[in-house]
Image (cartoon, helix red, strand yellow):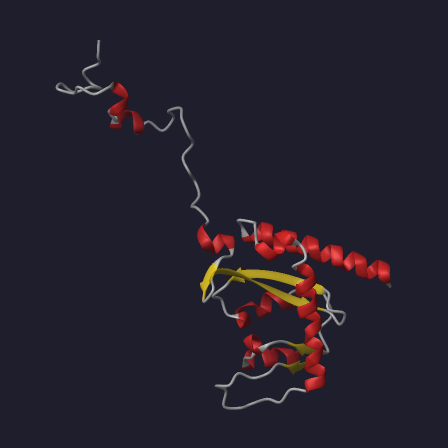
Length: 188
């Protein structure tokens, strides 16, 4: 016999097709646990919209030999200059010369580098009123970081970004970087 409290009169469906609000209000009822956190979304995954679709940026601070000192992952639409502080927090000596691309061209970054005793070699953006000159032979050394990125992309998992979260992607990029550091240490 059906319980009249659970099944109102006139209900002809199966008992499983009827939701009973009284049962769902009981906090200690068995079943799936309530979700206590929010889903991550694209921000947690380090994905962001840019011209090419969903992308991820890997910001790298390297040494003289083109090997990484610090890695930082951001969404594709974030500005490069907003991640300057995260890269400079790495435990290493302050640079004598800082080579960076136009994305890091801002007055606060240039001033911070001067305060650290470094000479900023950053080309200026076209829309700046004051254009800073850059030593071409010195700036040409920036290709060491580009070559490091090329060697990093030899790891297929880094090149195609299989990882769903930014933390796991950063972890594997760090693992690939360690592999390159080991090769460098054993070669010298």
